[in-house]
Length: 76
Image (cartoon, rainbow, N blue to C red; front, top):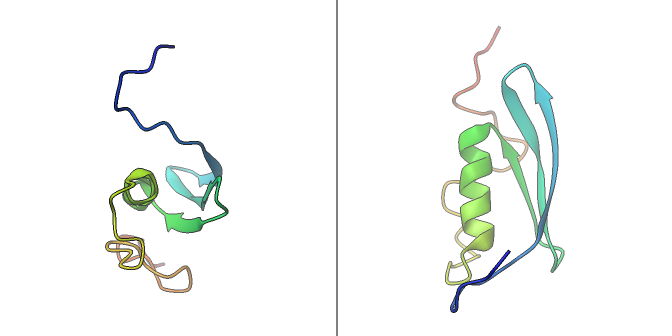
């Protein structure tokens, strides 16, 4: 695999469980930073935030705390 000049390559660990079509888990950066997610959209948001080296890590826009309910989850 060739790497283009200016490309920032990073490694993350994805620890996830799939329950039917719903994904839940944790992303872990090499630095030890962790981001919890619940749902495909949150996984995408967490990946973008973790891999964006120019992002303000303190803001965590679009991520909810793990103890908050997922607004997209269907309640029974």
